[in-house]
Image (cartoon, rainbow, N blue to C red; front, top):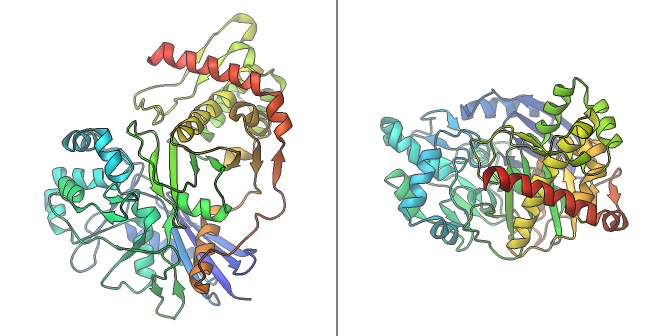
Length: 467
């Protein structure tokens, strides 16, 4: 019974799971925190990995790493860090993103080149910021990596040539999932020259071995890792409700959305992973609960006690600005306040409905790129909410599956490691395990008209305020 390990190096922590390579059963897991903030020394991720993995990797046959997307890791000619890595949530490169879009001829040109329109989160914009604001550091940069690339490189003993995978590379905005090649012209446009970039491996191709002889797989980005861990197929769309919200599904061809709403990523299996991101998800619920002076269990009770539609109340949940729609300076707002509707129950339900309406707009954006949405897999911290589970099929208009809580990014990295270990054409088949909750299609049909009306009111409020 070979064992494999998967590593999820996220913004907040490093999580390690050890799985049975044949069944995917989780045998052990541990975690260690990362420093807070929007920049971080890459060596801190390595230290966290060593802490979390202590005693867990002694008898594993292969290791895979899935990491937070987009982060900019810069190394000099000796392999030393030039500066702390800028993370996906560091927005100092927003102006650089706007300039880059203009310099290439607009959003459509970028979408057709690399599948995505640059945002402050993406690596290409961070390199442009570095060249403009820290030219001395920029001059020292010999190699640019992503967070998962860096950890794979360290696991493999820091070889001369770093490697990556097509999934994570597609989030840089200088590697094209359309052509399967780096766009070095775009890298030069942003940075002024072309530093060394990792070689892009095939999905099941090993990156190398640790000094102890343990196979290391190609690794991938966190969203691609989650998709692999969940084993999604065409027709499945994942809605992840964490600090931010993501909506993504696998597709058989690359997407090019000039609006910038859908990022045209590749996945970790050789297919594609169009993705929509919202800034506001689980914290909409926790913030509303705090305002009402209740815990999350009581918040659920209040929301479930209100009728669908929240008595007409509509919450636009842009508490931290918003990325989809692109309203970075927006604030949350409550609409249709009438005396009879102003109850704690209606406010709690309006928070749930507003958060889910924003993500339902993401489902529509994916449909606009050609994806068929047959069911939603609901994951993340807020997926545990009884109110969210009750309201989601009404708002989304399709059946909803809630997999059991698990570290799906790390499990996806472990599944990739098992795939590389076997050398098969396809990844091993792992089940989601016990505890999966299915919300039937009949419930969706009964709530279709109600869901459409809730979404109509949400859209009307958004248009009235923002056009």
